[in-house]
Length: 460
Image (cartoon, rainbow, N blue to C red; front, side):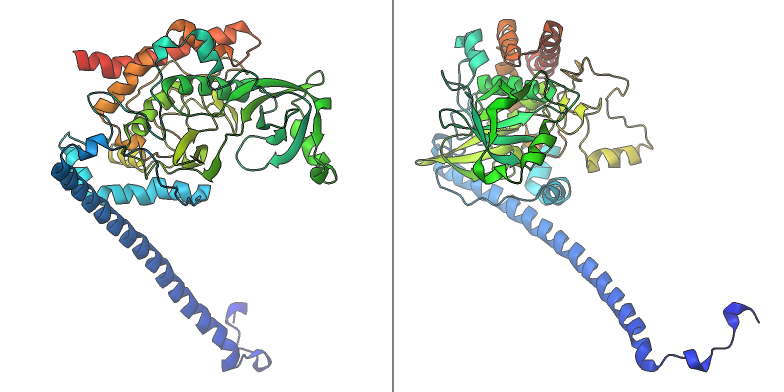
């Protein structure tokens, strides 16, 4: 008799009582499966109800606007006039929500689905005669009246650049980019963010240059400037001095050159910071839909809710765009961008489905052979398909963009002069003039792709 089939030894027989855990394990496994199934059903029901509610909300809004005639046109639907209570999702849940739950919900909103299939997608609520009024997220700035120097300064007012010495009040622990919050010699608060070790100028330059371009386009952004800081001018606050010296030293490792460290300094905005606003909630605002093309232009792939701020001032909210460390040729997590950044979402159900249905014949459009221009500017490809461009994670406002909103943004982009582009890039303070010239050339090429896709096609 083999060892596996020996007769049981009575001394090692287990009682019925000792066998109970096996029964319970089986029952627990069954209930666990039921729990997973209930979770799936719960998610599906949530999406169904959300889709149906969204559909009827849209129908009732259309009927109400029709009944009130011009009432909807003269109101300010994209002005936050009531102070909201904002709840910040975790980044993991936000990805699941935008990439899975909201995609199912969108598919169950029959009004939107039918209108898109018929070639008449739901229009935005505030684009009238090709123009967008001022809102909580946008201000009509006359770009043609901006001097190159005005573009270079952006929202930075005279005397607003951070001045040493700097007291570090908190180390930055969230997000991909290292840094710290400081108070300068005049008591003003800033967030200092560092470049990744080995890539001096890459992240800091991208953040500052992109902020200047977005401000000129009309969006609300904080003041971002390049500041070169002497290490001796950095001091930990008394609360941090005892236990954060080693952490600060680690942050500065590989980033200090000849006793100084380069940072992007963003001024902490005035007002009550409520938290990130939700693109999903404001997805019918033309300026947020059209932001897709502005972000495609600078390849700002990190377009999640967490990179926004809603700030309350007196009687209204102001929606700021922040954190541009993954724009231009930079990726805040890795250094230079991957060649396919901007062509696919990290979780891309649509691309996966199309690739499966076409047996792999469907291609993303990116060229994996592209390489970074330099460590300072990374990889910003002159190749751009503005219709197919995508951020890291699905943005529910971007997905609603119509041709009318795209033409509005393309027209604004077309107004940038070469001198203005040079001025914005100069704010990045690149050491090698060839890096700055390369960025201008690529920005012009990417802008030309947007203008060709939306303005030239419209005129034809």
